[in-house]
Image (cartoon, rainbow, N blue to C red):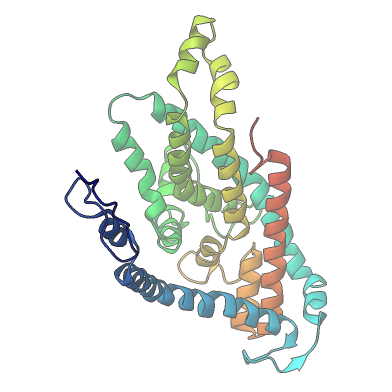
Length: 337
């Protein structure tokens, strides 16, 4: 018997059939990326570009182009126009920093920040600790305390101005004070002593405490219960648990809350403007003015857009500087361990 002839596989001929009955060469050709895959990838990129283009264009035009244009205005003599006219360099910055009114507004906002930030921080943390200990109704309490954060600063300012501290004998604050023998007080007009600070502080606390309480609650819920159980076995209770476990584990949340509070305090404007604007129980001349209030009056009142733009960049530099200093001391962004 003659031996069977050996077959040679040539290029382009199908090889031996695979387990499914198809040749291995056909399977290899089927696995190669074809024109359909590249077409699908191209369609995906086009869809992504169409979806993101409006956002990128809007962000570029209304934010970054606006910032660049504002910087050009800060270096120009732009009065009554938003077009840079005469180049003045840093003269707007020199005039702004030499203005006693602007420096006074910076001093006032620094004092306001130094008081409102620790008070809001302590109130938010204390409220979060109390709500976290409640087993029933925690969600309802969290919602109740969070509702003021959804209220507009303008609406809340008008509520404080016309209902709570309107200075009338029938006002809520004066009615409550009358129960303890107090005479009716014009809260916003009284500058000696400066009772208007009570209005400002209570308004901001009512608006902000609930929001930061929710942030602290999220941090408290992320602390492992095993740490408290192990500390309880060692006899730690009460303040020792708070000092040794709770506060160290809330370090990241605390630093973030402090940073947000600092930025929000330096950007204070709505409540100051609406409380001290002329109107019911308002005053014609505000006894306290924030930097944003000064810049609003400069740009919108005097229509000196060059000076207003320069003040905006000065205030931005101040906020960035304070934030960097705080991050340096608190270790914000530093890797742990």
